[in-house]
Amino acid sequence: MSRTTFDLLVVGDANPDVIVSGAPRQPEFGQREQLVPAAGLVLGGSGAITAYGAARLGLRTAFAGRVGDDPAGAFVLDALRSGGVDVSGCVVDPAVPTAMTVILVDGDDRAILTASGTLDRLTAADVSLGLVERAAHVHVSSYFLQPLLAAGLPGLFRSARAAGASTSLDTNDDPAGKWAGLDEVLPVTDVLLPNEAEARAISGVPGIEDAVRALAAMGTLPVVKRGEHGALSLADGELVAAPARPAAVVDAVGAGDSFNAGLLAALLRGEPLRRALEVAVACGTLSTRAAGGTAAQPTWEEAIS
Image (cartoon, rainbow, N blue to C red; front, side, top):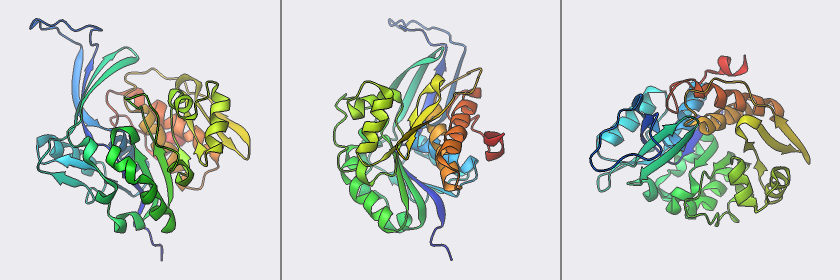
């Protein structure tokens, strides 16, 4: 019998996103009211969007994070449950409100305003070892937004590997711009999932191909999201690329997280790296068909067609 209950355990951030489309570049203060084309309340957080997308792709998925004991936290947990994600490992914190993000969208660009709330209170100790031991793969998101989790992440990943699980990390952006603290965790990270700017920042190398090689030398498999240039990785010392797919983008919020879900779903299904990159690019692209991170995430059949 398999030891696993879940194909994927995602550990990380979850919050409501308030997405304001057509936002002005410089909102007027002085109590001025400005009309915008659309706004919506949707599931947000890199970890939550990745988990939702993975469940949509058919993976048995669990999510472990921290939310407040408030309507925003209830919204997050209900949204994940409705997508087929197990949230029994989530911590509900009565002392601190759920994190909240407002995203101002202007064309294909966006500004992101986040009130951290419970976001930076998640720790590695919050993640049950029993849950880790029942997962085939453990993925962590938003490393730099969760310093307590980051501090315990090498130990968490070592425990996952000892139990037979593989591991992956999407650091996301570092608001402090320091990109420090990864030396111990990268050697126990099977797959690193940065975007192009993050890959350059983590490696300290400006050229993207050289950055990929430098990251691989740190003990991990880098898979770099490149937007309109597709994706880039490394296999047996050779660069492996997947081209972008044409798309009429409605909203790119969460596209990188949907890419993560696609890549992990493909790898966990036994697909070779090149094919996994193609599936990941498809998932990221298809997710841009509607506003918000989860509304247009594809099924497995859609992703491979």
